[in-house]
Length: 348
Ligand code: UDP
Image (tube, rainbow, N blue to C red; front, side, top):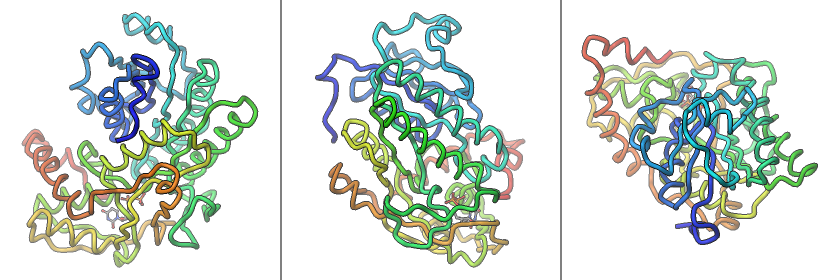
């Protein structure tokens, strides 16, 4: 466990943009458990109320519906929500708002660019005004289709600036640049995490990523849609490990970008086979065309996180999948029967 910050101040005020998303909501849980008062900002474009419903009504938790591509006027947002604002400045600001799956950012290309650019600008402005520590959720996508593997923080990346993934990759690269500019010009206390593929409870069934697609397909007895030959690799981190690393980074003094992810690299075909084993499914594999600019390899070098944060993942892929299967089973059971097929659109 990272050091609790609650001793510094009885209850630090912490704001999470994208707090109703997959990672954002797990962060809200962790921050509350560590004794923070939490403001969750989300416009629910890809986040979901059901991720934070269990927190609504807790006195230390405030949900504000807001699109951070517009300026963040906190007092006005509290007035809108008919809630008295907390009487202390924001101590920590975690900027997690953004569509994050290839399917989501293909569906919202301009919004993805705006949230990475204007959203980060607004969030940094708030952090500067309030004297907050600012943590940017960046991504392994800034490495593009990497020419070196594993990727260290020193690698500058190989990104197609006009390809279908560029709206996310370039927005996050801009977000890193403006974060460093605020650090250098205004001395904002900034942290940058480059998050590699992460999975677990609260992923949307229809976010189009490999893991939820394969889980849903396996549990429904449908073929698993492996793109290309499935030889491309990813390294998947279970959500509790990632949140632990994020909390350690937040409460550290580390300015430079830090990779967080699980170095256990698997091919996408191996992932499909692991999900068949974890679910006990007899589904077949269906090979489909590889999307444009799909990165061929992705594996974090986590030396920096190990040395600076004393962090490394603890949950193996096999154990993480076993923890995650019941969530997908329950979510599929809770789908309205008549709309089963509509609620989980096909993989593409
Ligand atoms: N993929 C796949 N089948 C699917 C969804 C994704 O084979 O139904 C592949 C995709 O082409 C990519 C990898 O799985 O090579 C990981 O894709 P994902 O969308 O999960 O995330 P990414 O790491 O590409 O952002």
